[in-house]
Amino acid sequence: MKIALLNPPWQRRGHYGVRAGSRWPHFEKNGSRYMPYPFYLGYAASMLEERGFDVMLFDGCATRESDAAFLERVRAFAPDLLVQENSTASIECDLRWARTLKDVLRVPLLMTGPHVSHMEDQLEQYPYIDALAGGEWEHTAVEFAERTRAGAALGGTLGLVHRQSGTTVKEPRRPNTEKLDELPFPHRRTLDMSLYHDNPGDIPAPSLQLIGSRGCPYKCHFCVWPQVVYNDNRYRTRSAKNIADEIEHAFRVDAYPYQSYYFDDDTFNIGDKRLLELADELILRGLEHIPWGAMCRADTIKKNTLEKLRRAGLAAVKYGVESGNQKLVDDSGKRLNLAELRDMMQFTHSLGIRTHLTFSFGLVGETRETMQETLDLALELNPYTVQFSISTPFPGTRFYDYAKKNKLLLVEDFSAYDGMSRSVVKTENLEAQELEDFLVHAYDAWDRHALRRGGFWKRVAQSPVASARAALGNPRRALQFVTGALMESQRP
Image 1 (tube, rainbow, N blue to C red):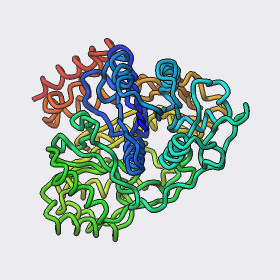
Image 2: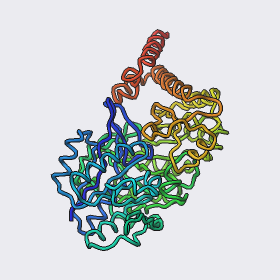
Image 3: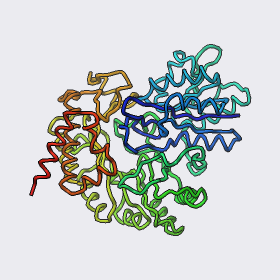
């Protein structure tokens, strides 16, 4: 039985979509390189292969191919079953694809992904979708495929929403995967791995993407994953040996010419004992010469552990910050002490580890003054790279419920839920346009800061869209940027 696992193209003029593999689906401008590996599709594909299915993973977001070319590739594979991933921001596109795929292929279609939880009571609206699977959906997809192959009824399949005798049946939620070491390494065989790029600190490409844990014990009110995907805050980890096995397999058995690797965990660096064991495994196997990066927090690791990881090849980290105002950070549920952040940033840089910091405007209580505090902190900390965005309240999160209850939610059209440039909320003190304008201002200020420190043109060469975003899409910002750059160039 053939199964096609799908991350269909999602595009708009001048942009490509980032969906599967991302905690924050959004549009990137054409010319950018960022593309996450579709982890859930990859794990599901490997699990299906273990059970004798013939699988092919089609990632149209990564290939950036036309809709017609993508559809033809899937049709040529002649699948017997389809597994399609969705997201909130792309859901209109996802539903169009589901309808098209069903019309063309006439085979069962399982819709998966974070937005499923918002669709579970609406299956009757989508006659072209046979079933829905949310949460950690890999085991549900495998059971759905096995029952379909056997011609068995779907009733009792945990985690599945399906039709039975003309009515919609919502089965009990499937428990999250506890023993991550028992999962096979994710499927990469039918993908062009050169298309996946998440390289903080400019760790060399091509780079292998992997995860060492699932879950997060923190309770950020805006984060979809613990609230919607996991439905809890439990932190589950792979063993150091299992992680090192995957790295060694990718570099030495698959022999793909990776030059680095990156852990895209929700929070990679929790548990010093486990992290020290991983460092020992990497050094013992002679893998410490390979540079790598990780998605981290600045306050969950001891300095001696970070130092050991540096000796094991750690070259770059992403630290989530969100705001430069301690009250906003606390009220968001992040529980990050900004004094500890400052101290750890200094220590991280002292080890020669490059940093990427993420900030978000529009949290509950945001004002013009708190936005300026955030920008000031970003400039003070002087990371290698930075990301500014606008906080977006996705359905199923406490942030969404708060915004809706307090009449701060301005847009119900999910296609607008892309915090890269647009705000779908206001705050008690700021209109959406003010948030959008400050986002432009923050990037302008950062670009001038980068120019002053001497690294601006290097950034332009390595990631042109990151610095030329205005020239491509916002004439007013382009003028601001050029004017600022000229002023900086005249400084003695």
